[in-house]
Image (cartoon, rainbow, N blue to C red; front, side):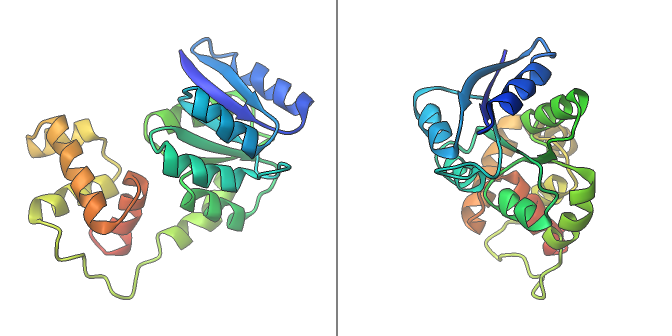
Length: 210
């Protein structure tokens, strides 16, 4: 069972989202919050695989909650669900560690697909928002040189991460174990001061590795 925390200040909207999510028998909303502060408090006492946050909530908004959650529990997947088709909100959400940005007019199929994409390590962004956001995220840096601390092996792995391959696919491509790939990626993230493989993929594109 996939455990989900749902943070939304409007009770009726929250109940409707819960019903949509639980049309998939493997997904279960095991925690509910009315604001970001309540959501963070629940994360301190319970484990959740996916955390769905509204952006505009009282006390603490979803963007701040996402930032705190990603810094404390980076293994937990955060999905932003909002009425605001705003690329600045989306950029801030992704920079704060969110793995998805969906609009509330999404249907149950789209919402469940986004949740499962987050779970598998993907990045799920509503189509119209992605059209504006992704070019800005992927913009090349003027100085395209990769950090010299990165070894040739790490560079090869970075390239495959940037191309969207999973750890298993990279291990098959390079004839290395999945554990070895994970260790290399952790080392790369430490060297570059990055938080996760999404930031690593963006780094690879910006620095012309991909």
